[in-house]
Every structure is written in structure tokens, then in C-alpha cells.
Amino acid sequence: MKIVVLAGGVGGARLAFGFYRMLPPGDLGIVVNTGDDFEHLGLHISPDLDTVTYTLAGLANRDTGWGVANDTFQALAALERLGGPSWFRLGDRDLATHLQRTALLSGGLRLTEATARICEALGVYAPILPMTDDPVATKLVTDEGKLDFQDYFVRRRCQPVVREVRFAGVEEAMPSREVLAALREADGVVIAPSNPFVSVEPILAVRGVREIVASKPAIAVSPIVGGQALKGPAAKMLGELGLEVSPLGVAGRYTGVITGFVMDQRDESLADGVSSLGLEVAVRQTIMRSDEDRVTLAQDCIELLSRLGA
Amino acid sequence: MKIVVLAGGVGGARLAFGFYRMLPPGDLGIVVNTGDDFEHLGLHISPDLDTVTYTLAGLANRDTGWGVANDTFQALAALERLGGPSWFRLGDRDLATHLQRTALLSGGLRLTEATARICEALGVYAPILPMTDDPVATKLVTDEGKLDFQDYFVRRRCQPVVREVRFAGVEEAMPSREVLAALREADGVVIAPSNPFVSVEPILAVRGVREIVASKPAIAVSPIVGGQALKGPAAKMLGELGLEVSPLGVAGRYTGVITGFVMDQRDESLADGVSSLGLEVAVRQTIMRSDEDRVTLAQDCIELLSRLGA
Image (cartoon, rainbow over all chains, first blue to last red; front, top):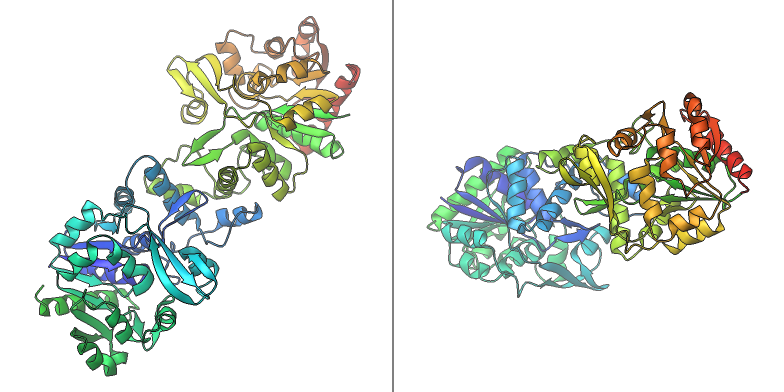
């Protein structure tokens, strides 16, 4: 079964890793959010692409979820001494990725091609595909005004109250031919347990993507378990945007796109509610603590997709 | 006595350090070669500015002469793994300087201003002045064709035979107002024991600089001792360009600009020859092994400049 995973950062990367371990080469494509991409110190930084790449390469820092395991921060400390910005935590090894990506882009490669080069160098054989090669920037309209994603996420630590999420540039952005091909060839699509508003919806907002996904057997895994997000501000945003802070709130956000939904055992009491949205529901253990958890959840997703005809 | 030192990399930095230690604040300006500057991985790298800055800040690697002492190379190792270029040895702390300089330049500062910011952050109070804020690129016409400076110096390890040295862009380059002011206020100018062809002559080639220096009491310190350069390809280049590989060859290169010359005791037998070029000669211990050697040589320079009316 050919699967495309739509992924943001940490949660998306962990589930993508599960599929990467269990599917034969050629059967997995991972389409990654680039709405968080930004330029910093002249470097093109793609946080979600890096998290997915490092995770699949076995290099990710398992504690933080982002960055490279056992990275050092000599450059950042020196930069701080020079009066440079230190709010974005650039590890020395991580910095190399940004330098190399920026150099490849300056050399004329598309982001998709630059990402492929980096993956190849790190021995990652599954295609990790930026949702678009065009610039899209997630902006948050908050009670403190309009904020760039990294401003909100890193500098303001997700504290402002979010009123609306916008994807600047997305109207002009085209999906790459690689994304289109992967989606068209897919037997099923899995929306990873990533933040619906700032990780998944930017991908769905790229021209044509929502429609292709909706035309396939497609499922989502809830990033909300027991009323909380495992990582990041998904729960807080659900509440601020007036939605229920539960798998129900998430599933409601994806109606019209998905036909199946995987939610955690802890939320079993909500399964009927999710079913009543017209979704095929699988109640499973969705918290991925170990590599085995990741593979098991990927298998659960495939099982649900099978039920949906994939 | 107000002194301006014209400096390239290692030798220039060491003598500049001697003056920095002995002169009161405000009496020293250091004009530094930027002909070696280049862009690498999107970063603006100024090797000679960095060497002088690190040396005055007490951060320089005393073994290599370049880079930061005890620097680590995590980013470079990771970059190499990613298939990026590793021929230019970027330390992690050193990298921060290039990132910060590049960011300051992107923000609209002149190189002079960016350098001042970096110096201020590192506690260096003497003005370290790029010879110009305009782009000048040293090119070497060699038996292997025309080479960019870093290609010749780092990648080809100075092996090609040099036929000619050119400074691309120097006709259009203007000295900064800071360089002009420092030179005009100087009582004396000291050409450091740097490579005449690729460190000092680019500075002298910037519009008006040679004339101002020639109008002042000005001396040079020989970078050649006992037929050898203490660092770099100065001796090799002297030979390849058909000049005597000795203080005489160096002094001859500066006639019309300097009126005094400091040469090493080991070359005492050549002092009369140098005198016969019309130069006031001081034969001294010029090899700077310790901080004290640097200060002593700076004092020797001031003594010679005094004899010349500075």
C-alpha cells in the first residue's frame, strides 16, 4: 500500500518514522509543512523538514524533539557574545544543515531538490517533500497583533491568544510535481498527529492538495490526547479558536478531507461523537514513546486505511 | 605619537597587538587588507580582519595564527557529511563571526561599521579599519591560470607559481572616511611584517592611500627573515616575481612609500644594501614569539619613526 503522510514537526516526524521502518522503499512519501520556514542570519531554516529528516536519519534529539542529538552550541554562544540573536537555538551540527540548504538554494536548486540532497547525504531514502517550493509564511493574528510564526512560537513561547491563522503567499504557491505525483500515486493519505492549524492546514491550503487528499482514503491521527497536546500549542489554539479541546475538535476540523480517524484509548468515551461526524474510528494507543510505538501506530493507520478501501 | 599600522593577517596582527598594548587609547589605528575577503556559504568572510580582531581580543589561536583558540569544528564536520565544502576550515566560534558580520552587512551597515560592532562586542577598543568598504578581490595570475585568493591560498596551498597579482575592483574602491581620517591624523605609519604582494599592496592600491602614506614618516618591518617568510608565501612569491628573497627585495618594493625599514638581526649583513636604497634602517629582533616580543618590536618601530621626524 502506497502511503503519503502529511507531517508537521515532532509528532509528524515520529509517525513518519513508524511508516519508514515498516513500509518497503518506494511505498512512502512524506509531505512536510514549510509554513514555519524563515530566514535567520541569512540562512534558510526549515524547522519541520529538519525535524522529519533528523528523525528518519536517527539523528534527532529525542528529548526535545527538535535539533540534532548531542549537538553543541559553540557558534550560538559566540554569536551571543557578539551581540547576535540567540533566541533561535541553533546547534552547531544543525547549523550545518541550514548552511548547506542555503548554499544549495543559492546555487539554484528548488527546496525539494535541496532537501533530497540532504536526505541522500544522511542516508534517508524515503522522499521528504516540502509542501511547495514557493514561499508560504504562517502568520498568527493574536491579541498582541499579527506575529510571524517563529516570533509566536519561539520568542513569545506561544503565549499570545490566537484569533486567526493565515498562510501568506499560499494563494500563489504551487505544489511541486513531486508532491503531486506522490499524492496521485498514493493508495491512502495519513494526516500525522501534528498541529491542525499551523502544521497540517498549510499543507492542505496549497493549491489542489486538499482536493486530492479528499479524493483518497484519508485518515488523521489525533494530536490531542486527554485534552492536551503532546507537543506544542495545538490544545491552546483549539480553545482560543473556539473549538473543543479534544479529538472531536480536531476531527471536526478535517471533515470533508478525511474519512477515518485514529484517537487515543484515553479518549475512548469520545469515539461515538467522532463516529457521528461520519468518520470510521480506530481507538488505539497513540502516544509514541518508543520506536516500536511508532511502528505499531503506523500499522494501525494502515489497518484503518484498509477498512476504508485503500 | 599617533600611529597607523597597515596590516594583513598573522604578522600584521602580532605587531598590531604590540602597539595595542603599549600605545594609549586613541593613538592607534589599524588599516587591514580586505583583498582576501570572499563569500563562502553565503557568508562574508574577512580573514585578515578576523585575525587582527581575534589577536587583539586575545582570542586568536596562537599555534595556527588564524581562527579562534580552542575552537571546535562540529558544524564543519556535519557540513562535510552533508556533502558541503570543507576546504575552508570554519570553526564553530569563528563561524559566529561570519554569521554576525553577514547579518550586520545585510542590515545595511558598512564593513567598517560591522567590524566596529564586532570589536566592541569583543572588548577591542582600537579601531580596526577595513582598507575600504567597497569590494576588492585579490587575484593571482599563475602558471595554472587566474586564481581567486582563497583558491590559491587555501585550496591550492600556494603551490601554483605566481606571475602577477591583481586587485579586482580596486580602481573603483574608495578608502572609508575612517581610514582617511586615521591616516591624516597619523604622525607615522608602520607597514607590518605582512606579505607585500597580497596583504600590503592591496591597501596601498586603494585610491589616495599610497600618497598619504608616502607623505608621512613611514616605515616597514621585513616579513622575510633569513631568506624565509615566517608565515605564508611571501618568500615564494618574491622569488617567483623575480625579486631577491631577502629584506632587500621587500624594501625595494616599498621605495617611494617608506623612509625607514626594520629588519632582523639575522640579516644584518644586508643592512648596508637596504640603506643604499635611501632608507633609515633599524636592525632588531623581529620574530615575535611572545607578547613581550610584540611590544618590543612596536617600541623599536616608534623609535625609528622618531628618528624620521614623527
